[in-house]
Length: 396
Image 1 (cartoon, rainbow, N blue to C red):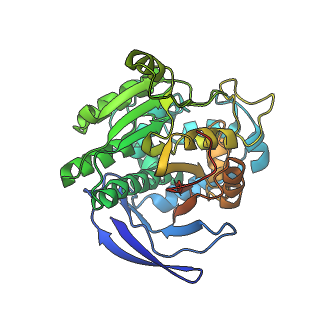
Image 2 (tube, one colour; image 1 turned 60 degrees about the horizontal axis):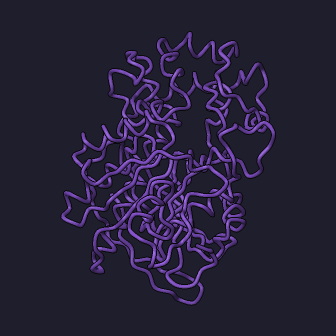
């Protein structure tokens, strides 16, 4: 479920009155967006702890957690320093690493899943451990399925997906109650777009106007998977796919055009960029954590912008009063050593909320209202950033 909220200001304290709203049967588990929060340094940032209940967690959870902790304790070739792991810019898994080698020995078939990292296809199993076959055509063994049900990386992906679904659904239902018409969304680095498609299906079934969504990714296989998933969820008619590099220095929003620009020219421009200030909601949940604060000579060649620049570019797509939704793995992730040193998921930049505040300030979003949702599994934080309805500092 999620909570529909009304607020009133009492001095410097925001009082929230919440009505629980049940959303569609949960695919990953259940989250409830909590009314509890604490004010941070920036006045408009509010923290919401989110209780979770993962539907896939099994009785083997404690055993698997203990085995995982032993593997994490082996580090990367004996080095357990997480800062070193974050700085280690590898594009391929080093299977000579003793901890990774031991994981493969203990969990037969996990090497089939490791082949998919870091593509969007690797997330299929984490979202839904009941699948029988991976995107590479290889089977999911019972032991791999058991681990996918119980490790925090997988549970964090599922709770993240539920929160994205809940926030996007709320975006439409709340605006619909104000008489708003069909919304326009864009999902940057969409991957297979599972949470977005779930939100669309629920909105469609609730009788509210279903948003039109542009799904954007550089990976052709991800876009194909997103189309397939949208069709399976019976929301394909509401989606368009668009292949582009969203990390280019010039940004993703086209410069504004005047009313005299002819229709053909406008259509041509839309083929090479996205319309500035055109979207009610911009989903960029799965990409910011791959973009460093400071680029270095060791950064992947695809990265041409830093985190603040990317965030500013994404913000340029948001309508006044609209929503920018981003996520980032937390630097306090309880099983971060396993993620970075054993699985060796590359290029992840875990961040604290305070670091995200600094990035948002550098991106020019200091006057945006930000709600931060923190699932109690401790893996991710989700940042719902609301652009001011009037004014604001962004140049479009």
